[in-house]
Amino acid sequence: MENANQETDPEKGQTQINPEEQQEPTLDKIKENQSQSQAPFPNQEINPPELNNPNNGELNSQPKLDEANENNINNEHQEENPQEIKEQSQDINNNISQINNMNQMNYQEMQINQQQINEQYMLQYQNQMNQMNNNPQEIPMNNYILNYNQIQGQISPEQMQYQQQMESNENKNIYDYMTNMKLFGISFQNGNCPRLAISSLEKRLDNKIEILELIDNKDLKKVYEQHVGYPCTKVLWSPNKNKNSLLAFSSDSVQIYDYSEEKQVLSYQTRLNNKKSKYSGPLTSFDWNIVNDSILGTASIDNTCTIWDLNKQTIKTQLIAHEKEVFDIQFGPDENIFISGGADGTVRLFDLRALDHSTIIYETKGCINKVAWNLKVPNLIVATGLEKNVIYFFDSRMNYNVSLDELNLHKEPVTGCVWAPDNPSQLCSVSEDCNVIISNIGIEQTQNNNVSYSAPAPINNVDWCKSFPEWIGITFKDRVQLLRK
Image 1 (cartoon, rainbow, N blue to C red):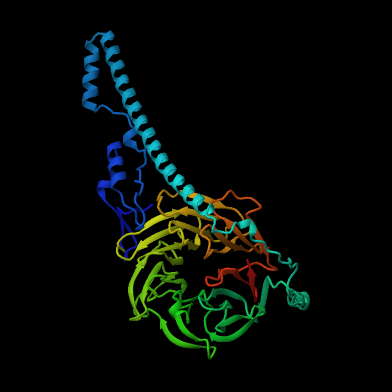
Image 2: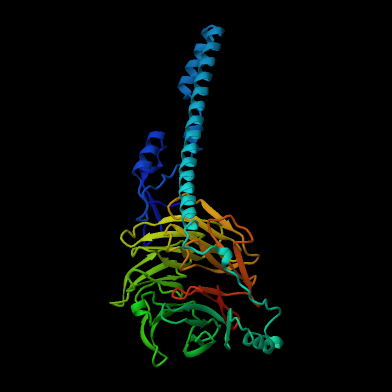
């Protein structure tokens, strides 16, 4: 784990450790660190101190006599009374026993100290979640009913029958759109109508972006399509309502377009490509700063994260963020804070005001391919592992690599998760098991508060509409579905 005392060299990607931290900690020092430590996140008041390994050699090792003393003792033994020798040996054994007892007490007290800190944060977290769940303004999860007809089988021969079934659905809890390419990216516009962008993921230089609209809550139709070259790893509308017409997508670079609602056309604006830098690997993801929309961050397979200034169309900073490929990046509710997940199995927190170091807030085996920050409760984060069916749920303030929960809701690898824009305790996850699951975080998991919908094929991605939170969008194979919550 890296903390505020460890520094990362952006050029070498190595962590430098202060030599003073390698000394053996004492209980007084630990308590002093606990009172003086500060959190990497602005809202944090107390950051628990990191304890060194209590099982180090200095604590458990027994004092040894040097050779000169041993020779003197041996010579004295030849002249001394055997009774005196026995008493001296007994004294030495007593001293060794006292040292071992003191070391054992120090180790136990350090364990108790760490346990109390973790219990304190867990209690604070439970109280916070209970307050949200007891808020009468929030609609209980039991009231969300998905009465969707489960579709069996593959698309092909039954495709026509399925389309007829969708058209005859009077309740219109689900809308379906089909294209002629494999789909991956999906993003809802923060606008005045349910409008979304989808992107294809074909292994050729002939991909496209399509703009879809829900017309009068009657039909989901395509209003425009834009042909692009490389497959898109992500597509995203600007989070700013005043600039919600801006649409960006990532591939070998980030391209930004402007959508005209009147003309229903995308106009090219700019392309973010760092050709001058020696780090210019393909982009795996990007994110728009929700506080300052002139800031955009990208993640790349060359282990770097790049922060762009869109007003000047220049790079603010580029840093080696992980030891291996960076798979995802997301800004938090603070303009200067962002997190990233990578192939080294870590989730790291960065502050744009102090990029000489980072904080590992979670670490696991394998790869972290998705991170999702709860913007309503800024300390709550979820992450997913590549080819894993587990959702890791943790608190960014704990810094002890402690998972608050590991959600095993799916039977196959999780491919996406997103927090509800109107309820801080709701999380929607999708998986290769074809299931969309909306769960209440912080409440004991039962069948009553987990609702799901089964798609006809493994799901690739998901997004939750911010301006119309009753709609959730998913992509699978060559189709898009809008689900009414």
